[in-house]
Amino acid sequence: MIRMLSIKNFKCFKQVQVPFSDLTIISGGNGVGKSSIIQSLLLLRQTADQLRVIDGLTDVTETGSVDFRIRLNSAYELTLGNSLVVTNSEIESGEINIGIISDELLDGKALEVNFTADTVIPSANLICRHDAANTLPMLMRNQGSPLFAREFHYLIAERNGPRELSGVSDAGFISTGLAGEFTADAIDRAEREKASVHDGLQLQEGTSLFRIQLEAWMRILVPGILLKTTRYSDINRVRLSIGKGSATAPSFAPTNTGFGISYVLPIIASGLLASPGTMMIVENPEAHLHPSAQSAIGMFLACVAATGVQVIIETHSENVINGIRLAVAQKQVRADLVTMLFLNLKEGDTQPQINNILVDELAELSAWPKGFFDQQSKDLSELMRARIAQKSGEQKA
Image (cartoon, rainbow, N blue to C red; front, side, top):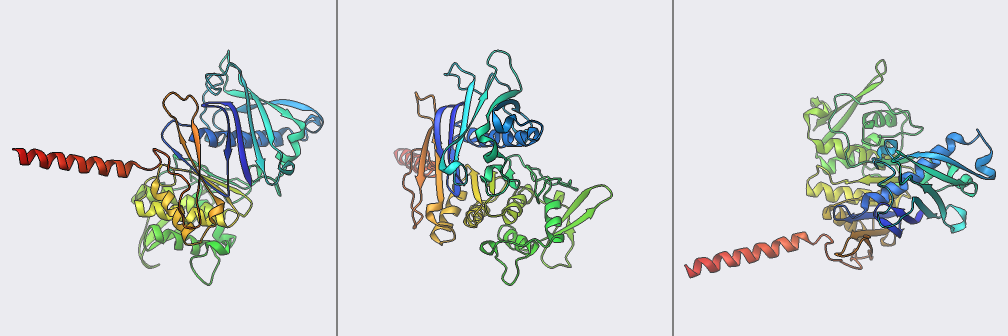
């Protein structure tokens, strides 16, 4: 598992180290660097992908160094713009360094990758200055860092809404896609392959079958939900139908349901499919969900992390946080496996501050920085003052 991420001269970060655990929650206000942390990880993964393409074409990757291009846009749905905007505005250099310390790599030493951004002529690429010492660790599909494993589950914030038909994934594992676009295919394929679910994620007793456990988890969020898939091999599409109640009840296309189901279903499916030793990144799991469902998805992702999957969450929801805390209190996940990172930018600062908040066995937090999900108490205080002022005015009248 990744234990530390180092970032130098990338976007809002001049130089920073970001701690990671089995379950890492990244929160904070808008525009304080949360997405930049995830983008740093994705640039490293794209580097490994590109390295696999050129590996075998030349022996330079194992004996010396080689330069190759890394796209700033499109790959893993990155939208980083051009080379003029990816370096820190206060550093007059185009050199970017991103590194990780992972349990599985280099005996605990950092794996660092250097990139060069053209700061004169805008380019949609970075140049990776690849060091041959990194080749083997980045090419390892098995027994390596989960960031570079073949199986990799990443769900972006802007996931697909309801669709009549879904496409078919060509990934080397059962994948719901970056935006959940292959969720119907993943459910159908998992059922046909009789995929089993980890013991720690089995809600329905007596079976480990994926479809049964998927519906069991979804019923916590949507009572009575039933899922049915129909594959159309001639057009390479899969239809997902959603029912409620009994198996004989009529089912409907996702377009006849709300966005919440389409947004949360790929999260539940990916979590149940993720193998121990892999990585799962989820942006805004709370999107389009009722507060009780947000809490439930937090608890679910904590349970996924407890099975040996490294889970990274970016969230704005205190309900997701509380769901994770509840999972700790109920001993569904160990407290020492959880790290909460709260990013904030104080007045006068030019680099976000990263607050590392730990959780104890009673689900108490080690710190509660200003701005860390305190808006409800602030609003209630303001509401009380407004009421007092209003009553005081009435009495004077």
